[in-house]
Image 1: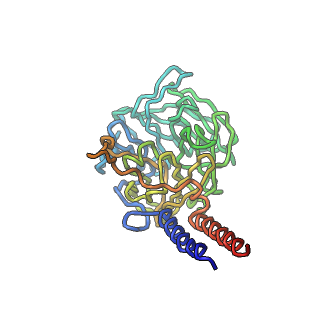
Image 2 (image 1 turned 90 degrees about the vertical axis):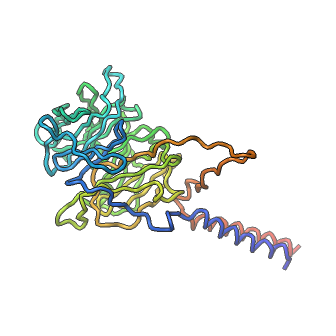
Length: 395
C-alpha cells in the first residue's frame, strides 16, 4: 500500500474529531441548559415587554407587576382605577410597542397594556402606561373564549393588536386597531392556544405571519394577513392538554452580540403532574448554547416541563433542541426577551490587529441533521479518498 494513502487517513480522522468538537453544542462550563427560577410572582401567567424604561410587565391572578432588569418586582395598576379582573384565569397580556395603524390614522400609546377579558362581554381591556386607568377597549363577539394576544411589530397586519379566540373546534383571529375597531382575519384557523408571536421578515417563507402553537398536535402554525394557514414545524416534543407546545417568541436583533435574557412564566398548578412554582423563569445569553440560538430564531416552549427548542427558517426550517430535560415547571403565556445595555463597537488594537471575531456558528443544516450527519459526510470523503488510492495501486 502506498504511503500517501496511509498518510491521508490520520489527517482525515483528525479533521473528523475537530469538526465534532467545533459543532458540538456548548454550554457554560459544559452544564445542561436549564431555566433559572428568577423571581417569585403570585399566580404568574404571562410576561411581555420590555417597556420603554426596560421593565417587563407581568400578569398574576387579577394583578399586574413591573419587574426591572435587576429583578425588582413592584405592584402595578393596583389602585382604584387599576386592573383587578379575571382572578385565576389565563388573562394573557400584550405590552404596546407604540405602532401606527395606517388604515386607522392612529397610533397605539407606547407602554399601555392590553389584556384578554375572559368574562362577559368577552374582549380586550386596556391599562394606561401609568397604571391608574383601566377599562374595556374592544368587544370580540362570536367566540366562547380567548386564548392569545400579541402586537404586530412587523407591519404586515398594519401594526394592529392580534387576538385569538375559540369557536367550536376552530380558532378565530381578530385584528384590532388603535381606535378599538375589530376586523376578522379568519374564522377557520386550527386549534391554537398560548403565547403568540409575529415573525420578522427574515423568517423564511413565514416572515410577517402570525406564529401560534397548538399543544394538542404539537404543530407550530403561521397565519398570513389574508388568513392562509401553514405549518412551520412540528418539534419532537410531547403533545397534549397542559403538556404540549404553549409559547413562542422571536430572539430580537442584538441578542447575540449584546447579550440578554429570555423569560417564561411558571404558574403554580395544584394537583398537576407539572405543578409549577409561581416563578418567572429566566435564561441568560451566557447560559444558552453559544452556537445554537441566534437573532431571528423562533423559541418554542412546552407547557409541561418547559422544554425549549429553537426553530430557524433560513429559508428552510430546522428544529434545534435547547432545554432538553423536562422539569416540574408549568409554563404559560409569552416568551419575552430583554437586551443588555449597548456597548461601544469593537475597535482595532495597536499594531493593526482586530478584536476577536464572533465564535464559529454551524450552518443551519446542523439543526436538522445534527453532528452525526456531518461525521457521516466526512467519513464518505475518507472512503472516497481510499477508493482513489486503491485505483491508483491497480494501475
